[in-house]
Image 1 (cartoon, rainbow, N blue to C red):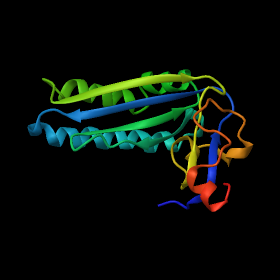
Image 2: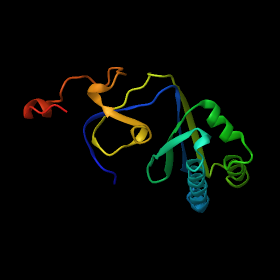
Image 3: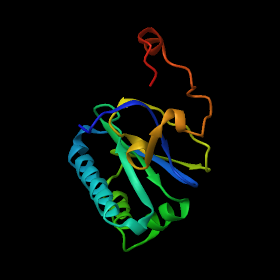
Length: 169
């Protein structure tokens, strides 16, 4: 567990970025060994990406999706970086996807993905008394009072517990 940062914080990142969410689900129990192998291939991709600062991969957060599913919330500097990784035969994605197409048949394991292009300033984050997570673990965290991008998720008001105690964070 990471170090808890006290108070109300927000993540800030300059420029546009990409949020890529994906996952996979075990649909047939007899394919559990293939499901685990697919998960290992995905983990290896993240390890490779993390060692390449020029890849545009900012990082990821695992996302457990019940007993049969797993996934990730990934952050990329640009859509072009994500596409380059996905289509480059010298990176791990192309051979891993080939393996999926050759070995996962008849709906044994399902896959899904969503891509969101986030324009500069069109996002909001909020962390309170948390170790760095998500975008906050990959970028700069600043006190909420100094955060300039506000879409309405957070306000400058103190929460109920802060008003009672008189402490403003």
